[in-house]
Image (cartoon, rainbow, N blue to C red; front, side):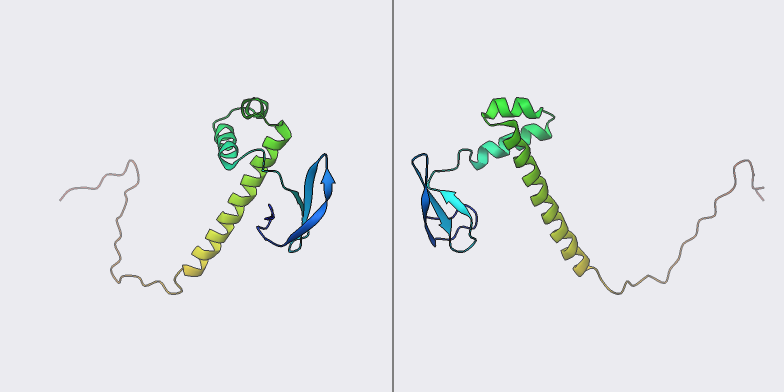
Length: 122
């Protein structure tokens, strides 16, 4: 049985609940059941897409058949994952910035005249 949390194959039986076998992972120590997850990735992505398009939490929950608490957890989880990806991308960009910037020796200056002042033409 594969752990739902870390993907490890090493687990042992850990009792049952309402006729469903429970397991405990030897790697991460978390419990899980032999049941498939109720909501797949595509349902969660659809809920997130609806949220980004200003659909309310209760309406999303009713549409996908989940509780509003579950929808909020999906949104928060997606936010945390996105924040982590942005942090990693920022670190990668910061590491790739050049240490020395070379400037060209030509410097251009355009003089602006103040409003109301007129230059005499010769």
